[in-house]
Structures are given as C-alpha cells and as structure tokens.
Amino acid sequence: MLRRSTLAPVVFAAAVLAQSLAPGLAAAQSAPIAIENPIVMGRDMNVYGERSLRDLKKVIVPTIVVRYALRGSLFVVNQGRGATARAKGRFVVAGLEKEYLQELSKRLYDDVVARLREAGYEVLTYDDLKDIPEVQRMPRYTADADWGMPTVNPPGGDIEYAMAFPSDAQAIDPPMQGYGWGFRKVMKDLNAGIVVPEYTIDAPIMGGETDRSISSRSASVNIRPRMRMIAMTTYTTEKLGGGGFQMKRHMENLGGDVGQVASVEDASPRVANALSRSLSILSGSADMQTSSTNYGMKVDREAYTAQFLRATVSWNTEVINFMKAQQR
Image (cartoon, rainbow, N blue to C red):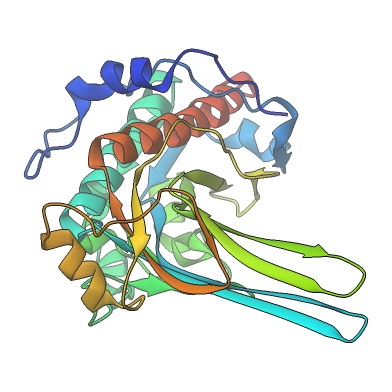
C-alpha cells in the first residue's frame, strides 16, 4: 500500500505556494521541485527490464505526456428478481485551459530533467534535438477543435483526456512501438538512450452504488471533486534494450477537494467554457448522488496544482532514485 504522511493538506499547499503556476510564468528550472509529504510507492511500483538500466549513461528526454480528465460518464445497472435500476452520470471540467496545463507539464518536464542530471546522467532535452531533421519530421498530435489541445479516449474507458506537453513542438506522436522506436536513429547517432514519463490525472472521481431488497433494486452515481493519478515511465537504450516503471494502482488520497461540483445543463465544452468565465459555480453539493444528471467541476487551481505536483513529483523521485541505484 502507499504510505502517506498524516500532515494536513493545507500544510503541503502552503509549502508549494511559492512555486504555484501563474499565467506566463515559464522560468527555466535548474533544480528538482521540492515537495513536502512525498508519497512512497513501495510495492505499488512494478519495474521491468531493470538490467537495461545499467547501460543508460546518456539519455534523451524529448517530452513527457500528461493526460488530464476533461469529461466522462458512468453507467450503473442493478438487475435481478424482475427489477432493474439504472443510473447514469456525466461530468465536465472547467478551468483546464491549454496555457495552464502546458505550464504544469513544462514544470514537470523540467523536474524530470533536473532529477536525472542530479542522479549523474548526461541529459539531452528537446532543445538539444529540435534542429535534427528526423525530429522535425516526426508527426505531432493534432489539437481538438473544441478544446484547443489534443485529446484521447483510452480504449475501454468513458473519459476524455486532454494531452498536454511542455510545448506544442513536443507533442510528438510516436509509432505503435513507442518513443524508443521512433527515436532509434537519433539515439544511435547521439549514442544515447531515451526516457519518457507518462502521467494520467483523474479529477473529479465518479463512482456508482447499488442496493437491493427482496422486491426492489436501486442504482446511483456519485461524484467527488478529488484527484488521483497513475503513471508509467519507459526507457530504451541505444541498443534498443528497454523496460519501464509502472504503477500498480492509482495514487489516491492526495489531499482535499480540487474544485467545486454542481449540476449543469450538459457535459459539453460549451458548459466548461461558461463555468470558467463565471466567478462562482452554480449552487450544488461537493458530494452528490443521483440516478441521472450532468455535473460540472470548476477547478480550484491552487489545490489542483498542489496535488498534481505532490503526486507526479513523488513518482519522479521514486523512479529516478531506483534508476540511480542501478548505475555501475
């Protein structure tokens, strides 16, 4: 299980307030992000191909991939003894504009680079690669017309995520075989391996509940304005050996609410934009339960940023500390 500090979330939020992301703040970062109450993964982190880590000395970090939940749905059915109950809920998130998400991703990218350098690796960033013809020719993800940034719906899921990168140029769309295969010629020419972290942020969290009696069934959907994160980091050596780190389960209980939730007209980008422009959200509860409704969550950026950094930087710390321990 994850081990977490019992210090109040507000203490952590205050600790990172000095590093909060104001619009337009994009200063280069030369040291890793310092956080309080880091989350220790322990047995909740899978490592595969770890022997290949011994061959990594010089690494390319061309980008990172961060997926942020934008909207989603959940359908719950409770059926039996001739009775059926159904419930459906949808949500949309307001306040996740491209500039803000790209700023978060850039900050996290700089943290990865700084930690790898601190661990003794020679690191080549996108700035070192951007003039290489092979890199310039690589396909980039296309922005969705409604959201202004690339989006993805993972197979088998009912959530649409924004894909945010440190910059538009770093929105590199890899081949099916992954970034290591796409960069294989660049890696060979530069005598370097590659490391690419990926993170998926879910907020709010939607769940379903069912109940039954002798003659009836019930079903409901509930929503909480909380955050959870799951991540993986892959690496490939210049000889195309590789492996990675993968989280076994979501990192949860990161703190308190990261926004305010209310019933809305529908779960569309139009509603998200309207909520972003309003000073206060429509009247509603932060923990609602119903048989069918649409929810809107307006992000509290201070809380969202603090919990995002706590989760993602904790992951970076665990992964790169493990990598450093394998060096020879």
